[in-house]
Image (cartoon, rainbow, N blue to C red):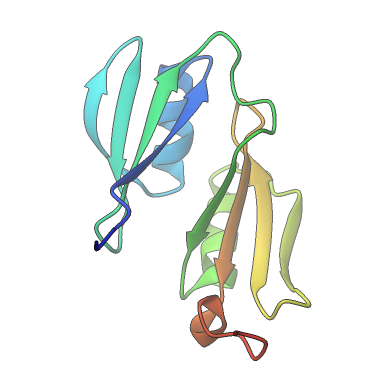
Length: 125
């Protein structure tokens, strides 16, 4: 069996508010079915990302990782657009460089650059 990631869907309280946030991150809106659903294309690769309305919202249950080759520059651009980061890009002990922020529902978002260490860290089995 061959498996490939199609999409990730997260729960949010206000789909329209979250659309604006994820568009600021650079995702391209491809489906808008308010008030319940929206779907985006990532700017690289084939995976998509969806929002689904839920009364419970995210509340830090979901962690989203978006990889970029231009992390430091992207953080500067997003900061200039009003996006608040919990921490600016920092080199982690697991050999990724990461910046962290939260979406309007409290879902943790990690923008990162890992290069070869994404799937092939020195401790890989």
